[in-house]
Image 1 (cartoon, one colour):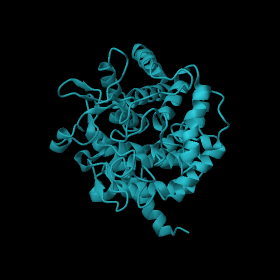
Image 2 (spheres, helix red, strand yellow):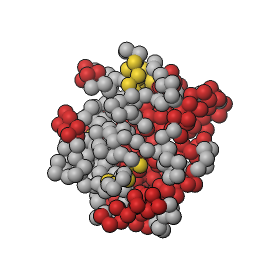
Image 3 (cartoon, one colour):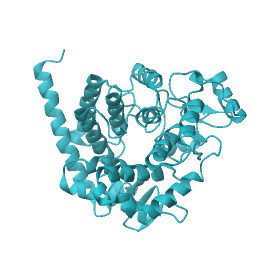
Length: 401
């Protein structure tokens, strides 16, 4: 039972976090869109004072419904900047360095910037129909969809990608990737693209073959067979499936997106949330982004994971705590009807944002909770606001009308 005093204290914390989140986003908003993190020498050196595709999209979702006029007005700016630097083949850049007027497409490409750009554009258009946003960007939308469809397997209707090519950009996920294809299904639903039902069915078969019927397509049977014979952990969706190998480290963000974006049925949602909660991904703060880090002795370890000494066990994408993903955890709980758990998660998320005097750290150590990464992270503030709104409204921004 929460005492009246603690309940009042939590309300005060949440109110302060709302104010701090809006303030950080307003501070990080440039004429070209929202910066990934607060500008400064360190942010410039590491490229964080740029307009990132996925960051700008997630922030746009929060800014557009913030009730804060400068943020409402600036929600589209980052998406406009990305569109202005779209590649001739339709791909959106990983980020745009506006100081150099230069787009960057990462080492092996960046597949999710295009996906997030399309999702954010569709949701802003739905929220602000009078602006005819889709109509304004119809040429860029057509080219972006064409580029993505060129990456789609013609039988599985799932996107294929290189490793280290999405938000977890120094992780060895490749082939068919859970996170990416959750976004792809949402894009198909938003834009009425063909094959959405096949995408959903193959998503569930390949990423969770343990609960699926035996596939009719022989290529699918073979891919699933490796996981069926070798996988140790069968509650969560696999993080990726490639030819003869797969990921079972437990990709929390990908699993949450599967729930939020309509790919999981009731049983899959219950199974997934139960497994994530049992792994205590929300402790000490929400949430740790893998259940079991990839160790240097593991077959999936790559030399690039040690760049900047960043992706060792319990750090960065390899088991670090990401408050941004914590916002998606809260939203998934809301959409599952677990409002009390969602509210507790929101309070914990506010505590994580408040560390070091409201530093909004990029990530925290997965075991100790020690703040790390770049401070002043815009999408931490955005994810808190999205989660806060979901708790207040009883549904996430991703719940389809």
